[in-house]
Image (cartoon, rainbow, N blue to C red; front, top):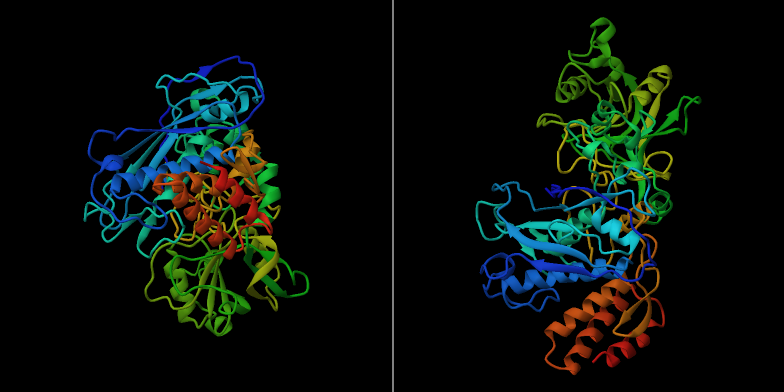
Length: 541
């Protein structure tokens, strides 16, 4: 689990003068220095995945710095962002553990360029104002990583960190660079300061993050809610979304089309598409495995008959069809088992309130696919039950991890998870995003940080929209593109790594040549850029 914990110093309200933005320098301070552990660990290691470090500590420091260089290149701003870096004995068992934690060390409000009476992460406030704002600790972001992984056999047994910089994470390993990028991202602005358990804003003031988080059910921004309304919003699975215009505009560039439940009959609703989420148990619900006529379950218990908590009395009607049941009273596995016993080919569980959801639990005896849909979907299906038919299909309009209006969903599981709830993109987002709450091997933050820069732009972070420079030479390769591709930033970070590993200029040139050839072979460099990059590399002595 990728868990966020905020550590906030005393908040300051200030009046400052804004200045034009240029480049940010993300500065790391190694809090493990001199300890012989963590980022200072002298254990020998062979270079791996483009990381030239020859000790465990060196490899960790190089990967950390690579992440800092990527963020430095992506963001604009006049002042440095100071980050503490250390390894810590974070919570861990043989089967689960906290990979890392991070957060802003100070917050600011009511400065020129800010939304009045709104908290900003200190790094974000510095980016907007161009002023090196003071903090009580002298640092802006705290980051801590689990040093027991790969060292203590009782911590995520069989796992280890992968310190390569190439994104090719081996099976069973955890990409250290991805996690560093994720955690620094929290400190830069990807988190809200509202308490997810009490709903209370920090010192009675909403955050800039809450200014763009919106609950579709309540029809309100998180910043405008009461504490009780926030508590409800933070567990309103699938219905908490980001309303910022940059994220919404770029979502179609990043997200796949969603798998939805499409009605094919009767005529009144034929062609309508509805959100659906697969259950945590049973075989996969996919297009091709979930289709057919739909029958409303009846267990013979009067007004609550559609709960399917008892054996179904209309088995003859359900057999060979998808069974529609309602959420409530008994376990999801019980409902699915009763439908299965009646001969159903799949189960649609309609929510008792709110949107589509993932039916949870375990059920080894359930052998048919199960999905969860919104309360409104269940109502529409019941109102059109005569001749009803539906199937899971890939939508041509709906995005995976976005609502019907194209707004990207935020993580708000019904089981509240402090440290993860609210301050991440939702797990429905596909492909997986850097700022989801759980680590996935498919993330390649060395090349792409998907919708994260767009969210920062919504909050007010100035982004570098120019081309990457190696030394004083312009490569002509964009630092970043809409949709989060950061090939120019990658070139800058890689140049610094090649400098570390090279004994002379010739070795540096060879290192960079190999890297740009790999980018070109992968189709990640624009046509005609290779020569300009090589000229810049040759001049960078």
